[in-house]
Image (cartoon, rainbow, N blue to C red):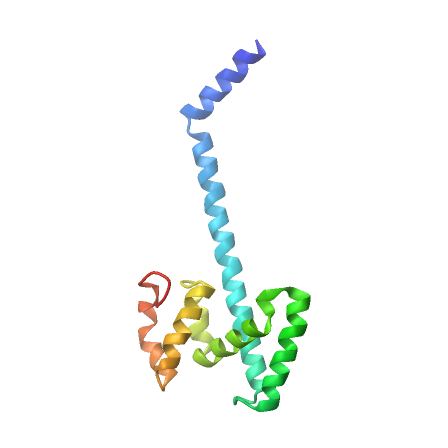
Length: 147
């Protein structure tokens, strides 16, 4: 009798698409969480890069500042992992240099992942005037892996 009830339950699940709907909900929630985490990381990285540029580098490439960046990267890397290594800190600084306006970063982080930003700031840096980028932000979503 118990087997018959179990079998009836399985048939009802398949016929009503309950499992398919629940799976879709789970997968959709995973995507939303991943986007929220990525947006939070983009904001964090931009804020860190901006803070280092303002406080340590004084908006320049000072020699002593470079040593401080190395030390910060070593300390944060040991404490929080390779995502905060010296190399990563330097990426954050370049990110803040390429996108000096927080409003642009805020608007774009809804559309772009951190890795897309990383590809974009390299393109932006090729131009002598990074602000020219403002007029082209809608094109960033095109193309695989970059701007």
